[in-house]
Length: 183
Image (cartoon, rainbow, N blue to C red; front, side, top):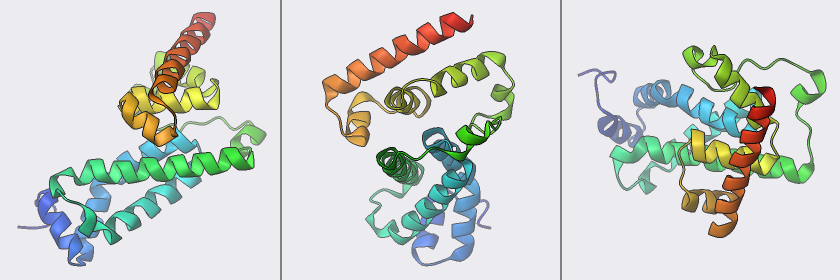
């Protein structure tokens, strides 16, 4: 059986033993999804690429800590999200201004699949989300796009459960108002 036909459990076991072909196969299976996850949080394609690469390296070096190989994808995504949030928090603390804000670049790469990307409604929603306060945008991205529940968002953003619920509620209301203005 070739590595392309092997299920993820077998590939993870091969990666754990240092098999580079298995690592490449896992990378090829997950890299686009992990890049899309990172770009939605850091909003910088170069940083998202770096974070994705670092996350794969972390995952491959810490495979022994993975308790259930069936959960590799979710585990890897959690690493990407944590690395993206860490970068986001570091950027906010340093008050960095992303280059695309300075250069007025039209951004086509926002992590949405091409078919959905062409939808005007999707473009309108994503544009409105980007214009929200940064914690609102991050909270909505984690909740609505990445599918994290309130408890997970609390842990990721280091806020209380009540603050998380309030923030998400206010973010949704703010988004709703922005969308009404553009309609």
